[in-house]
Amino acid sequence: MGRRKLVLRMKAATFAFAAALAGMLAGCGKMPDTNALARINGSIHVAAGTPAAAVATVNGSIVADDGATLTTAHTINGGISIGARASAASLSTVNGAVSVGPDAHIAGGITVVNGPITLAAGARVAGAISNVSGAISLSSAQASGGITTVDGDVTVSGASRVEGGITVERPSGTFFHVSDAVPRIVIGPGAVVDGTLRFERKVALYVGDGAKIGPVHGAAPTPFSGQTPPD
Image (cartoon, rainbow, N blue to C red):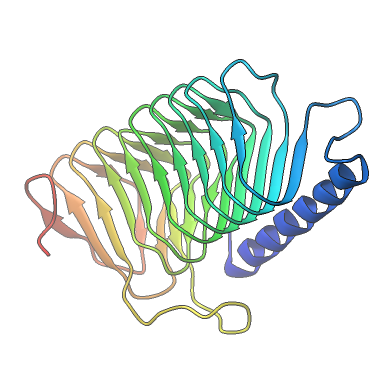
C-alpha cells in the first residue's frame, strides 16, 4: 500500500477513534441508539450474548469472550483479545497486542501501530492486517486483505492462507523510530501467500517445502525443510 498510505491509514484510524470516543463520552459513555461503550481509563469486557456494540477505551484492554459479537473495537494503550468463534467488524490499537481466537471472524481489518498481531487456527480476517512494529503470526488462519508491516517479523504457518501478498515497508524516522534488526519472514510448509511479497528493506525470507507464494521483490527466498527454519 506504500509507507505513506500506511501512516495515513493509521492516523485516520486514530482520528476516527478519537471522534467516536468523544461522541460516546458526550452521551455518558453511550452512543445514541446503540449499545456502544467508551471509557477513558479501564478495560472493557464483552460477554457472549451481549448485543453487538462498538467499544472504545483510551487506557485499558478490550476482551471479547468466546462466541461474543461486537462491531468496532478501538483502544490507544491496551491490547485487544477476541475469543474463539467471536466476531467483530474491525480492530485497532496504537500500543498493544491483538489476538484473534480460533474460528473467530473479523469482517474488516486489524490496524496496530506498536504491538504484535496473532491469529489462531481457523481465524479469518477479511480486511488488511497492518502494523509498524511487532510480530505478525498466523497459524492455520486466513487473511484476505494482505499483510503490511515496517519493523515486524511475519510468520505464516500451518494451513494459513494470505491473499493480497505481504509488504515490508521502508522505515521512516519522520514518523516512527524502528529498530535496526532485520525482519524475519517465514512462510511455513503448507501455507499459501497469494499475491506479491514486496520488501522495501532488508529482510530474512524463509520459505518451507510445499509452501506456495507469489512473486518476490526485494529479497531472495531461503528454502527450508521441516516445520521451522534454522535459527
